[in-house]
Structure formats: C-alpha cells, structure tokens
Length: 520
Image (cartoon, rainbow, N blue to C red):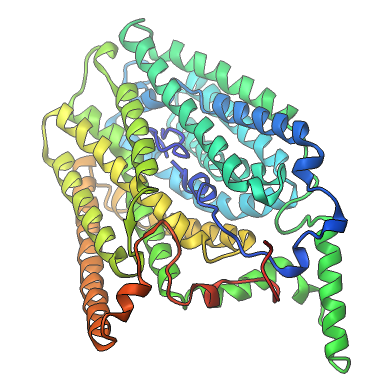
C-alpha cells in the first residue's frame, strides 16, 4: 500500500526508493591506474556502439515508467476499508500492514545478492510477477490471510527495486553513469506522478469504483512484466560477473605482487573475492566522520520516513472517513508530494555550504521540522492540514537524500558505494521491523494509528536532540580550531556544492586496489 518511492511517492513505500535514490548520487569515482584506458586500447564502449546503449537506456527508462504506472496504488487502503473488502481499520493497521516490513527485511539481502549474481534481469522479472500477484490478490482475495500474502509480495517488489537502479550501470561506460542514472530516476518519478494523477482523475472525475481502478492497475503491471522479459541480459555485474578486462587487471595486479613478494604465501581464492575485500574495507568506512554521519542518517531517518508512508493512508481514513470515493484525494496528494520531492531534490544540488561543519545542524533542523509535522498530523482533525503536513514531510526528507548520496558516494568506489547503501538499507529495515513489532503489530502493543504517529513524533524528537547536540560539539570544535590556526581553516573549508568534505578527502578515498595515478 505504498507507492513506488523510488520516486518518492506512495501508499506503500520510495526506496524505498532508498536504492534508487542512491544511484542518482554517483559522482566522481577514483579509478585505479590499471583501469585507465590507454590510447592503444581504442575507443570506449560508448564510442564503439553509441546507438546500442542509447536504445537500451531508452527501453529501460520506458520500462521504469510503465512499471510505476499503478493508478490504484494510492487507494489500496481505502479499498481494503471500503464495503468492497470490508476489513476493519484495526485489522489493516495491526495485522495486514506490518507484514510488509517483515517481508522486506527477509527478502532484501537475497535480492541484493541475486541481483548481481543473476545479472539483474531475472530479479526484474520476479518483481513484475510479484506486482501481478499483488493485484490479482486485491481483486480476488477476501480473507485476512490473503491480504497478508499481498503484503508479503509487496515486500518482494520493494526488495527487487535494487535491480532496476543498478541495471542501468551495466549498459554504459563509467563516464556516462551519472547522466543515465538521472534518466532512469526521472522515468520513475514521471511514472509515479502520472499514475497518481490518473488514479485521482479516475476516482474524482470518472467516478470509477476501486475494483475497476485495480483492474486497470493489473493491466499496467502485466504490461510491465512483459517489458521486463524483453530487457537485454547484461554480460557483467558489479561483484560476481566481472568483465574480462577487470579479470585481466586483477591477474596483472596479482602478478605484480608476486614479483614484489616472491616468498609470500599464495592467498586463498575466497580471500581474493571482490565482495569479501569490500566487506573488509567497510572497517575503514566507519572511521570516516562524514560517511558515518550520513550513513546513520540514512538508517534512522529513513526508518521513520517509511513508517510514516506505510501508515499515513490509514490515518487519512480515520481523520476523514469519506462516504463517497470521489471525496478521497489520496492520488492528488501523492502526486503533489512526488512533485515537491523532485523539486527539493533538485534544489539541494545547488546548496553551497561547508558540509564538514554544518551537516549535523542542517540535519537537526530538518528533523525538527519533520517532528513538528508529525505532531500536527497526529493531532489535527482537518484532513487538508494532514495532507499538507504529509507533502511537506516528504519534501524535507527528499531534500536531504541527494546530499547524503553525494556525501557517501564521493568517497567510495562504485562497488563499495553499492554495498554501503545496501547495508544501510538493511539496518534501516531491521529497525523498522523492531518498531513495527513493538508498537504496530497485534502481537505487540497494537496501537491505533493516531498513537503510532505520536510514537513517530517522539522518535524524530529524540533524533533531533542527538543531531543538535552533535552539531554544537562540531561547530564549537571547528571555531576553536579556527581561532588557533588564525583563520587558516576558513580558506580550506570553502563552500561546496554537494562535494566531498575537503579534509583529507583524497586520503580517505577507499579503493579495492592500490593506485599510482588518476585517470585524466
């Protein structure tokens, strides 16, 4: 019951759009000297077959757009609570919706690994099949168990979104990564926006029933499944399916080490695996203050954000239990929040600030505003105030997502960046499951939706206090050091536009292999 939050909208999720947003943050990556193309190697892949990769990217973006076309998604909760399905609000809140988080947590790691091992396409097909199953259950199912299975398949769909966000990078050369990532994300955003607008028009103008709207959604997702089967099958992936050139580079690097240390014992095969090397490299990631801060923000703030997305439609139904479908404006609100999220994400790219000094303060202020909006949503009886607060809440979160993405990705290789975001997402999902089990699930406290939003308000308030205390420490330390150095720090910490922190940025760039120079 969450719209595809890769775009940032939804009755159900944006990842969870988490994983999609991540790829949009690919910025400058340091490339080992051994991978720098020499003049003798000839033109790049993009120059050799420009038409081939362009058509592949266009087709993938079209697939992303069509897979986001689910006009019935913003209205799933009203559909379950209507006389057509006749579930109670307590059943939807405490027995049906919590299954989504548990399913997502269980499926996320296998989906992440299988996406790379199977080279994307099978996971995208699995996502398409899961979406078809979701809408078949919505149309034909009537029992509580069937709706719980629907949520289980929703979790599979969310976990498989990582395949779309990473598939695009198997089609083009590294020099085009940032551009094509923008194309793929734009396609998703446009799809979610168009879908929400269509859904609202069908309900408010066409006076369509929820059942008919879901039947139309089934048609769209079935077409998306057909498109996924037509996607080309990539020959390479990040971890398990390395290209021939990458393998040759690794062999060459190993030979050089053998020459330098002929008496050394040969390393076992598993120790040379790329995935294991990156897992070991994560120890260095947690030592970098900038990466640690934004990773923790990703884990804790995304947890609260998605919990709000999962339950906000139930809150709207309680604040304003409309007797006629045409008076339900979920689709319009989701469209507005998607549009504002896109605008704030774009605007964040032009912010000039010394992030190594002011990051904690910016995060703290925005988290405080989100806490205030949650308190407003949890206490107001005016549905339009509730709608407005939700749109602003999502906009504030989306404003920080590209900043977090750039701050993390700018210090890591592409492979390690993907692993860090995957781990952040997994930890966030575990935290969501724990909160769900304690406060939402029938087996826990089983709170009603208003009480849950007060819990979310307390959660964001605690985060605000922590961020502001850390901000005070960092700012005081910065100006104390600046006074000692006689203003030298001011020259080194010039404002930047979503760039990595200037302090020892080159020394902290994490590599899978040693490098002697940078590609120019």
